[in-house]
Image 1 (spheres, rainbow, N blue to C red):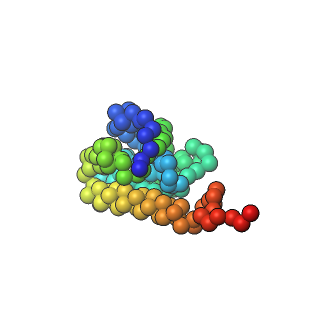
Image 2: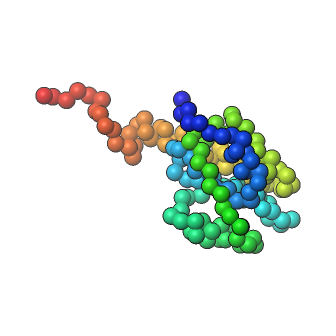
Image 3: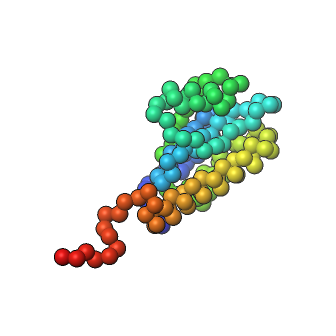
Length: 148
């Protein structure tokens, strides 16, 4: 069950429509979704999973590494998504992202964006499975009764 945090979907959609570079942080997935909608005839928009950084300066350096033909953006906007990754589809936020990617006219960027969504959902699913199995997680209570 997805949590019931109040989120302003209209504000998130407006943010995605208005800014060139957006990083989305998720509740259960440690990685971020980087959206860079800037494009040229050569380079299409980028939608990819990236590791978290310690500072915005580090994010700008990382962006320069993966997008060397682009100048630094005026700003990078961060969005907190406190729900499951798949809920971006259910709420229409993914459609807003895909509309921006599609508008650039780079078919390969559209395909990569869809692959990135599948990658994020798979990462989230693996984390859920690890939590159920206790892989990399510590339980507060044991499943078996202790001897007194």
